[in-house]
Image (tube, rainbow, N blue to C red):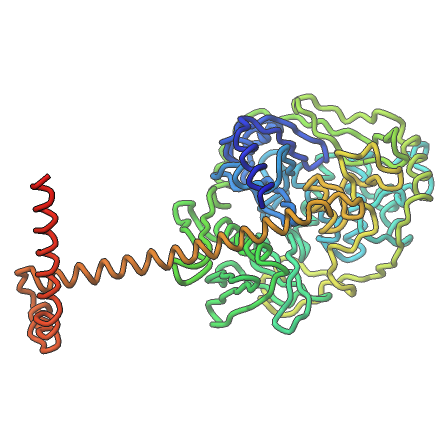
Length: 563
């Protein structure tokens, strides 16, 4: 406890903090912010760095010491939101998925959304049938390594890339076949646009899963998409509610409630922790406001409880989807050019990162491969023997459903795959950028992205895994922080209740004075004065109390005059 307050005092004395933001291509942007800088300042810096105008779809995410994710609130001070000590580490991610990503105005925006969906595909958040998976992966290959060249791409070259949590040889052959025959001549921009058009039609497009349990204790994943609220359980989508069907979102402790208007029912789920439940609620409030409302002026402050002195309050600050699209249509500038790098092998690691890199000067377009693709593939082939990757055949695992079918289906159960939805199912280790040089080669990343939900939290937080022993020394401090936060919430709730009680007593006192001392001749006041109970109270209690107060006031006045 003492160390926490001491460290907090030292941090308050600092005038500037160092902040590192990991971008969607896994490059890093480092800057210095003032102690009182708000989230909007940092967000604008990053968007200026990327030359990004359609920025409302994006947000800055950070992870606290308890591995809980948060979105940085743009209207609040950064230092007050961060629970860790500086330097701060955050990451840029897509916060609101565009309903039609291929129709975005600028190529730079489509490119960033492409990188996000590629990450979703890799982490298992985006599910699709085998034929769609092969086509999506082939588009990624075409966008990043160009046309198939027999002299540069040896047999089985597609197997050296990790597009999904699991691969099968049949799927890898299909990816290579599509890349060789169907996508010849497509530019990176065209391949990315086709990739977005295909991904947008999938059931799990835009899903950022929140692990929960239903009332029976069965695990489920809750998510908010551009089209509504989704619940995924096992291999099925058990609920789909359009945004106009959701009336209220509430939470209390670990319990999360979704109120449905036309059915007069309430869906109840349980989050792992109160903080996870609060984060789930805030994400729901923001997504509902962004996709449902017509104007940002319609946004209202939302309370997590029906009693204003209890619970949390939150208000979405930003433009809504309709306003964003209208503003995007008014953009009139020369399209900013993008630096897309090809395959770049790592000298310190046998694996390579085939994700593109954004340059800080986005107006220089180069789509050049800095080193021969054959060398990169050879290095990947060597690393394949040291990095274990499970190979599970998907078969024809997924049932295709178009977006229109999903909308017509309402909340009816829909099978999304033969396998359970498991976005945290991953076999690759977690990269740690700060200590990357100290890690063995087998512990480096392969696809430029962390793997499971828990591991991605650690990567975004910029902290080593628990296996490194780095977190165990801070467990006591983390537990103390949690206890202090719970005490603060309890004290705040008591203060709110006390404030309400004092307010009610003041109103009653004011009414009593009006009844006894005023000459207002109002009908309901006259009726109250004529009741026997009020007359008894007035002569037996109020009049003696008034005489006592008058006597005390005269006595105090006499003392003041004598002095």
